[in-house]
Image (cartoon, rainbow, N blue to C red):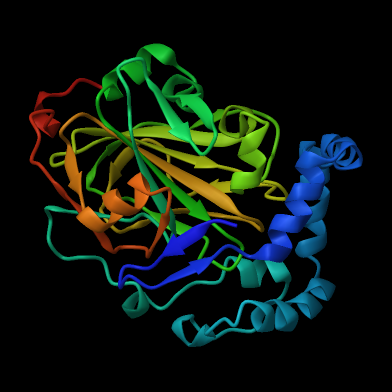
Length: 300
């Protein structure tokens, strides 16, 4: 079980039921055989189609009870399928975006861990090492982020599964990478290079306050689709960038060297191997008005 610490200092642990199921899939021979089938995109697509069916609404009450969810933060509507419930929209006032333009905001509701990007462009995630170039699909591009920070936002099934832009800027096109879908639970990271294998969508955003940032959305087991709303163009801080279909998923944000200072509690938690629970639009650090400013950069 992993520890998750809230911003007020209280803490909880990851769901044991999910951990037991993942331990079976990743740590046993029968589970790994089943996993070979489950990670195929067509299986995920089939599961997604089932969750789009009106009969899937029977799953909603049990899900709400199990996770003790408070739905008062969400817009009232009648859900036509489980996926419609899963991608439900929150009331804007329930996720206010920090008004300070110098604040680095969280792009989503998630469990956050921050890692330094080493000179050789590798960073640790639990018991494995991952190259920034694997996430971006380009090791040359990864050199831009040497000495920076890698922010891992891990969404679990009960989280709000829409995400936003952390800063104003000029966005590149979305680049789709990978073909296999794996869970992003820490158990899975023990034996598999999950982020390298997973389906993901990557883009760069040229900003005034944070330099060039990279955003990578990572699909997970039973997530058949990453839905991004925009192609290349101008984007606005706090505006919805996209959403995930059913399942736990991850957003990765790469920052250049000296682009921002993360809040002390997040850095301390990450140093202790503890994830920090954060919310969409919440302040998680301070931009350093870095020298890689918008009007000095080339095309993304």
